[in-house]
Length: 265
Image (cartoon, rainbow, N blue to C red; front, side, top):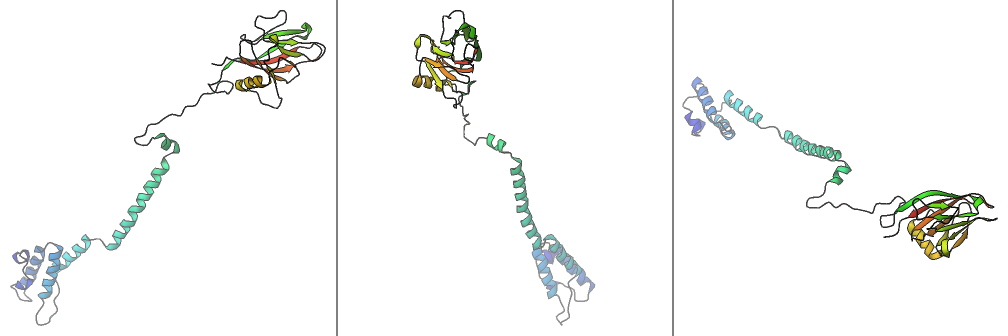
């Protein structure tokens, strides 16, 4: 309708109250006002179209439907409150689920942006628990025995494996074992001060600890008994550790366990 599209007041309606054409004209006018603002204006127009004599008029059914459609197009305010609360709660739940799925190992394995991962390296221990900065084990532990009926014997610790001889002194003899009527003795070849007894309460020494003990308490002769332990330095300069397994008095078989380290670099 031209009057509605041109936003003319409803009072321009050419038909009097009670005329059926007036109702049709008002419905066409309302349809022409398509926006919410125009719908409200149409309601005002209908109010103005009431009888000047004071009769109460009612808006047409077309305007009532337009008002209902406008109300349905805009949800109530409480719906926006529900949406405003639900969205943050959903975000918190997603964050908790995603953070719980990450394991400490996966987090630690990811370097931070721009950083370079560096592997920490330490010296690998050798077979006797020492770092690579110390000499490795050359041989042993190996068990050596010398029969008591021979009166003694010789031990070459530089041989691989260490060698015990009773009939003749080997070329590389390091240690002499002497057996008489009492406890057997251990002595170093040529009287070298490279034999050191270890206290029974100390743990098994490292190559470094043995070398320090020889340097501080070196001697050339000591008596042997079961459980006694010694650090010695061979004729070729290696460090060795000897533990007495058996040392019977009066000529029984002497049994030893020996471990020899390589020369220091």
